[in-house]
Length: 192
Length: 192
DNA sequence: GGATCACCGTGACTTTTGTCAACATGCGTT
DNA sequence: AACGCATGTTGACAAAAGTCACGGTGATCC
Image 1 (spheres, rainbow over the protein chains, first blue to last red):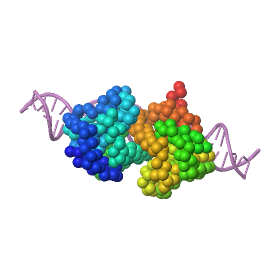
Image 2 (image 1 turned 180 degrees about the horizontal axis):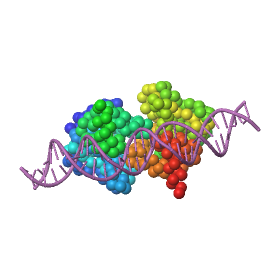
Image 3 (image 1 turned 45 degrees about the vertical axis):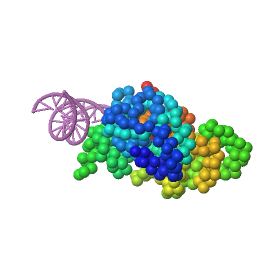
Image 4 (image 1 turned 90 degrees about the horizontal axis):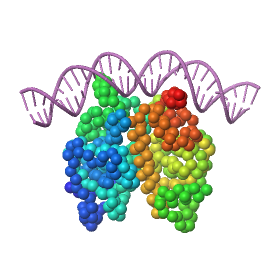
């Protein structure tokens, strides 16, 4: 079960993991199962874990004053889920994270983070995550302010075909910041 | 001139700089002046520097197929400017960065980055920058997909009052992803 | 196996935002 | 002083997107 994670860490941390380090990781990180619709994080709570998805799919969203959901992240295997602000700074979160399919996670508890970061490969990976996330959000932002709805959808579909497969269209619409009807229409128009 | 930077590094790196470290930074980082409208980075070029604004103001933008500019960042004193993707991965940039006022910068050359990161305070700061940027782009993204134009403007104004002072309204509009006329109307309506 | 629910599509209409054009103002340059 | 240029505002209209309502389909749950 840890194999997927070890591989991920080595790839993004750009360093190999010794057997001792693997043992340490196995000792610290927790295994957790979530059933569909179960919450990993709730608004108002501090996000005390960062989770690595071994199997399954999750979505992160906020709820505005009108009660509308706005999806910030859709995640599947090999992705990390967390509210980084809440996790790092131990402040209450504005977000929910919910299992969309039955999901298996490996968790990094916040209070053991310093211990884990002593492992060079993890430190490198953690850095890289932040880096990649920043770059990805920058691109997403650029798309969001530059492109009409349909183009945004096409970009997204091209970038994450598997996500589009595994989540219903109205979740994708929310992720793109458009109404589900708009997406539906845009899609049927682009077929012709 | 380096004093502002040293203070910044110590604050965000959460460590003190020794005199030797300061000397090393002074030896590596370059001083650069840009006049208004002069480019710091151009589309298609690799971003070989990360710059710290000592004095002045800059804007980062992309240009789409229709020739429209889309502003990604507006920056003033004490901010860093770079295309992180281009800088870190040495790939051609999609963005322009232009001095909006006459500007003074301190530059970290990409090829000396590893040397600079040997200084713990800089390493900590660089990490923190990535972290903060990640969190900030997440929030901006949340706003962009959740809020109508006028609300986005109000948020922005509250968050960065000085930016709103120093850049013309049509730049702010572009940053928010709306037409300048829309911003103008939204503003006059919110006064009544 | 009937009811319920989630999901997707579509029509009709409203609201928001963009586009194009015209105009006023202020500023710097020559 | 005269000019161009950037900026900001407003009106009229067009386009994009949102909202509300309805219906259909397929899955799931008693």
